Image 1 (cartoon, protein in one colour):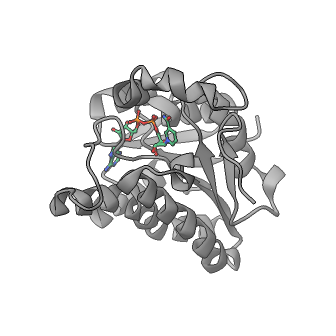
Image 2 (tube, helix red, strand yellow):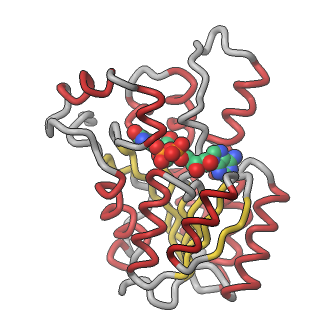
Image 3 (tube, rainbow, N blue to C red):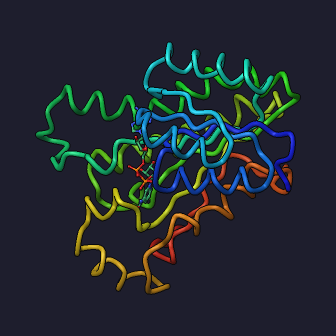
Length: 243
Ligand code: NAI
């Protein structure tokens, strides 16, 4: 019960990897806030784990502020934030050189800026608790050709490193997880049968499961990682090498 008396906000927790994080955190004693655009699925997850659902758009400062207010009203403060939400399953396929500009701006406002919008709203609450931990969801797409999706994740990595310095003096740590191909409904929509080919290139010849990400996330949120900040940890079955 590493998270007894801790309050953790998980964005994009209505399904997929975020849902796995929310369930695992609740199982280890955390009060979990499920922050997602999808109210039906989000309410379901929050109900299952005895947590709180708050309909949230991570690209909106107003929505992020309302989330903080609702969380503090219910639980009295915040100790951890997982910036997992992204446009992914329903993402349009297009090139950087031709993608509709309005779509590109909206995409980046969620997939890259969303982590910053949420961090700006939540960090004063972490500071009030004497510190806290933020985990951003990156992707191995940041290291591979994947167009604007990968570009947003490069931004998430940069944000993680820069914010670690801005927040370190407040005893707030910031790290990221870069999952490899993970078997969620969104990946099945995106990759379909191509995922089977992808798996052949991994050191470990299987897709990741949402539960494979949980160990790293809970480690980074917990005091076990109290001197770890600004890091991007690949949990990818050996998909990528980095110097
Ligand atoms: P998913 O599409 O199943 O879950 C994303 C969640 O974010 C959904 O519940 C969606 O409603 C929510 N969301 C979307 N826009 C939002 C917004 N503006 N505000 C609040 N919530 C919003 O995706 P999955 O597969 O669970 O991935 C989760 C995260 O992991 C994403 O950041 C994704 O980029 C990343 N990732 C996923 C991989 C995979 O293979 N599944 C691999 C590497 C990274």
